[in-house]
Length: 514
Image (tube, rainbow, N blue to C red; front, side, top):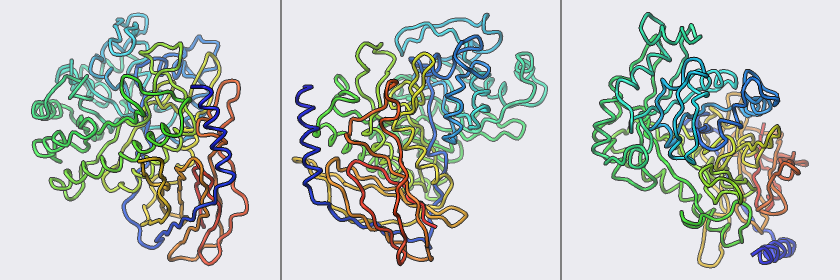
């Protein structure tokens, strides 16, 4: 396999030298803005899984690793730079076996539990409600808490909301004060269960809809804190689940409906490697990434029938790549590397979410640190930023900007019987009138002669950033942490409201036109 992969890369290099560039055009209507691209589309996810929390985010106050009150300092700095809008916690599957009162009070007195979903390791509950919410304040992000429906009770969830958000006199508010927090936190996003069709209870849609109504009734708004309640939504293409939730619950009791979809190149039994793959597997991976477009469209169409005003958000709160774990690591810890392929896939998903921002208003990549498509990897006192981190950074300019109508023409990417778009695009305009265009060339071999046409306005300058590398499987390691990183594009000019440049194969480009 190794010899085949080396041969494949060599062939790609030869083809890229000899292949003639294709031509592509992107046309942006800068005068007719559409929906707002919510910054919360660029949310993250941190589950009690592997070394995401312990050893990743949390190292403890006594650790020799530089930290801020127990939080890894270098990680805090990297997350603040990324302007993370929200962070989902404590799961995932872990959420529906998590009992929040085990995670408050003096850490030495907190009961231990078994993390049955992820490796069967001991969870000592040293990272609980206070630690999570203080972390969110530290990195300046909004918390998204997922409550326990699967093994919890209505009373338990109700008291958790009260403990966190109530500013008056009550047993739960007083308990919070006793544990060192005088004023309540502001927590808007609240998940009422997780994956309730599976690890969250193996429920039917009809049964969960009734349970949701019951639990959500007792998740109350306290002290000016207004909850944005998110129902556990469908597994991938379970359109029946969406139909039942919209029909039986509707928009009065829920503000969001979640959607889960992971990109798995092969099968669940053998998902494929994060860094060793051939051109066929790359093609299949990207084809499956574009499947998100179909999922979002079809679930949105169902939601539109019951909610034409689009009051209920589609919340894609678990998405990303899922490969085999790195050799020699615990299979239950889901630790995988992250290559240029993952950054390209992330950017394709961002463009899909942006273009559906009338309905998709929250999304969370899985996961933040050391798990699945992580933006950050840590090892002892070392930290590296993955290519996916840089994709998030390049797309920051879309946060809360207005979506612009955009169309494009480009050759499709063909490999054998597979045919997928070679180009993925979204555009927006911010309050200052600056236009951001993000373009992904999915083709791993062929560059494009690109023309971006801006209809309306009078634009004079353009800045650009590009993320690419020599091979689609290039990735950052602790020995070589800067193999894949963004670069500033030079020589960009606006002539008659057009920007022309070469879009390299396997690349992400962010243009800012003023």
